[in-house]
Image (tube, rainbow, N blue to C red; front, side):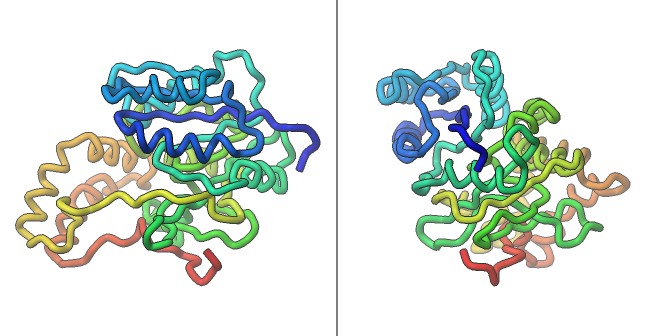
Amino acid sequence: MTAGVPRVAVLMTCFNRKALTLACLETLSGQEFFRQCDLFLVDDGSSDGTGEAVHAAMPAAHVVRGDGSLFWNHGMRLAWDSAKASGVAYDYYLWLNDDVALAPGTLRMLVEDAESVVPRGGPVIVSAAVSDPVSGKVVYGAQRRPDPARPLRLMLLAPEGRPIPAVTVSGNVVLVSNAAEIRLGNIEPVYEHIYGDLDYGLRASAAGIPVLLASRSGGTCGENTVTGSSLDQSLGRMARLGLRWKEDKKLHARDWRRFVRLHGGGGIAPLWHRVSPYLRILAGRPNTYGTTIVNQEAPQ
């Protein structure tokens, strides 16, 4: 690792998950290279006292207030803008979801993995895989495209004991070097809530910036449930079709359509990705691509 202690700004956004947020910060507080004054946390209008609790736990942290309309994408944008406006010359920025329990030594591992590939001062992005605390399965981290002809068929990677190339990242635990941010800028504002992380990784790859999965797991994070959604295989097909129709009008679906337009490959891709969830339901074929680990023979 490059000599000298790196300066790392930690970027977070939260809403009404005080217990989870504080538990995450507890695992962050013991990380080497972390300082309270380098935490930039957006409390997006929480009514459960999250912001006040964070300030009490970490008085030197920067707690930025939102109005409840920011969601993940714009909350993280605001946290990043706040860090850049602080006047501190940061070497790295750490994206951290507040439902993650960091493993000991994760921040140091991310920096060491980054600097084993690109010397400090260069552009690089490193994502740490996180596993479900119950199943132990990798649920978020970094992804590859097994088939270049299908640009949105992204599949997860498992840690292999060394940093390995990826094409994009999930935003749960991600280290972005200052040089990468200078090249790419902030997370794209076009997304309301999600896909800004995947978009960022894909833009980095397109720009020739190394995108990596870290050498080992970064901690744990519960997997988003599909119960009661159109992905819930326990429901009948007609019920699932009805749920999908309702989901298609919501925020996540709007962000997905934006993502497809930007990264889907053009042509009929937007139409295909609009109708394919309905076709999969009718055919009884679950969409498992986002949860498939392409190098699952690797140690996790």
